[in-house]
Image (cartoon, rainbow, N blue to C red; front, side, top):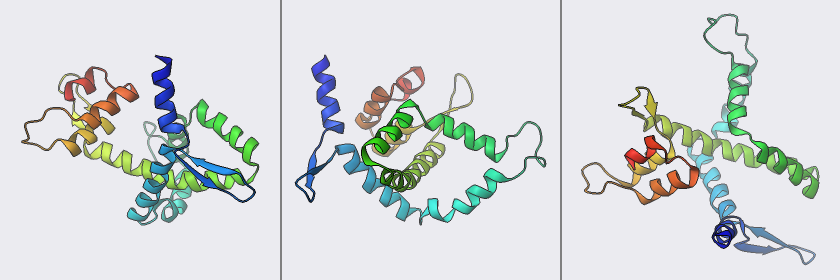
Length: 185
């Protein structure tokens, strides 16, 4: 079993491409880096540079006073803190420390660049999740996410197919294959 996990890890994070650098060293690029950086560039251009265009608006909303809203709502700063808490985990914190230790202060600049590109990808993912969410017939409310929009992308209405391989793989790999996702897939 350990060999299977090692093989999957090496496929995703192992060096698929090695770029020679001056001085005889090389830079290894993993499959996920090869996919995610071009995707971030594509979504940044496709959204007309959304992270850059709306950065001043983000600062304004974050710093605005919450005195005008009712007690049931949350302020922009509270929304920022909650969304950051949902996205940032221990791996992100350890990764920053490791990057600065290995790459020095210049690593911080590249982390900012990649974060801006990644924010375009996160925006597209959140937008698709909202567009393709479905009403939960059993509990009320809504359910959705990547498994749902992947399913809709690969399985067109009226086709005889019931399951999408891509959506099923996502649901299994992310642990989202609970009762809600399993019904749809």
